Amino acid sequence: MSEQEQNLSELRKVRLEKMEELKSLGLDPFGHRFERNAFTKPIVDEFEQWENQTARVAGRIMSKRRHGKAGFAHLQDISGRIQLYFRADDLGEAQYDLYKKMDMGDLVGIEGQVFKTQKGEISIHVSDLVYLSKSLHPLPEKWHGLKDVELRYRQRYVDLIVNPEVKEVFIKRSQVVKEIRNYLDSKGFLEVETPMMQPIPGGATARPFITHHNALDTDLYLRVAPELYLKRLLVGGLEKVYEINRNFRNEGVSTRHNPEFTMLELYQAYADYEDMMELTEELISRAAFKVNGSMQVEFEGQIIDFSTPWKRVQMLDAIKEHTGLDFRTISDDETARTQARSLGLEVDDTASRGEIINEVFEARVEEQLIQPTFVYGHPVEISPLAKRNREHPELTDRFEVFIMQREIANAFSELNDPIDQKQRFMKQAAKRAGGDAEAHMMDEDYIAALEYGMPPAGGLGIGIDRLVMLITGSPSIRDVILFPTLRPREL
Image (cartoon, rainbow, N blue to C red; front, top):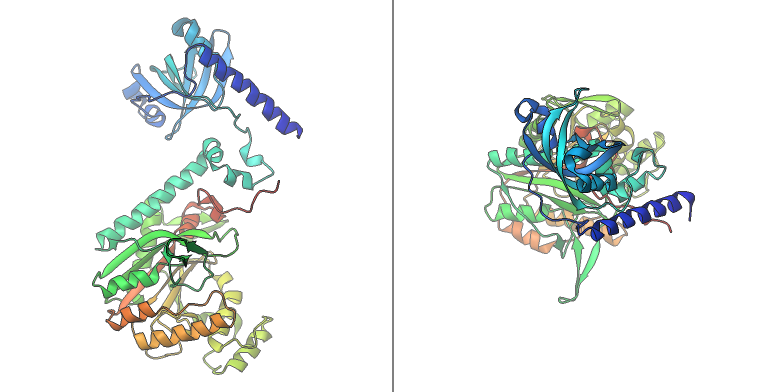
């Protein structure tokens, strides 16, 4: 046992002894319902209304200092902090003895009169103290300074206690999701829920998680996307639908990836990808302004401006601008591979022209995209669910939104031709048979749904976690997911 672990063990032993002392006095260290009439921040903000009034507050003790027969502490609740003033002559010996036993981290209920100290700090002169939960572990003094950075994510409950800015991030996350819902509801969209466990994972090129249903004796997959089920609803006549929920992709973890993440997906009948562009920039800019009160956000030293309209650039034009390669003059796979290798890229000998276009874009262009930018016109080979462009059928009516070198949104005019869709699924199935674990499976039921007739439609997916990262200025996706997936702790 290390010296630090031994010290923590000793501190916990002392707190356990205090817990037993409370019990010996006939008090419950883990109390019951406490009726409060105020929160700390409103008391501070509206002191004129609260001065000399009795407040009942509850929260966690974050500091404590005693001077003979008087003492101070700070209580923290969901709204903020306020100073508490304890005086032995006013409280009585029993209550003041409770105050002396109180540790940082303890949860207590307080009643007292609101006043302002000689130094001008708004405080509560305590007349009654109730234990609500004894903290058996000491709070870390410098949580940010811990060498094990992942400990903050593993013990998010402690991170939230000692770092108010972390709490603010998750409050803002909730506000972002709420604003998205408000916006879509106002536009006549219907919120729906589709299966998390699917017999065939579809809607994205990603490796799925596999589970087994014992009663049915069949394998099921945690969904990689809700897309194919949402589009089945378009077939059924629900013309504007959306879902905000979890997706699961069996991939690595990084500052930008978590295997379990939150997505918004929406579909609108009789619309196309250009309608989705307008909806996307309005939805995201409104959410950013609602949460921050500004269209400008600082992220990793850059100022992101969400003001509309956003820049729009064709994928082939972006590649030509940043690499000099003009894929409009490159029509065959072999030439495309040769040109990509001239840029220093490693390219598979079987890669098609469309796949090469995407590889060059990801390797040389994405890193240049800082301000909100629509990139449109993706190759068919990498867009198996998107409608072909009428003038350039080797490309699709699809776009992605990039901000700070990150893909934030993906959208397209939905492919509603069942014959074309089946052919594309067959090509994906062949890739899967060749070892591509991320390729689409054949979904015969989805083809059957399309054969009943799906209206022309626009669809959109937005990564909520990445969006919240940008709006809150958080550098890692782990900073915006309450309980991110982490590597097993080494023993």
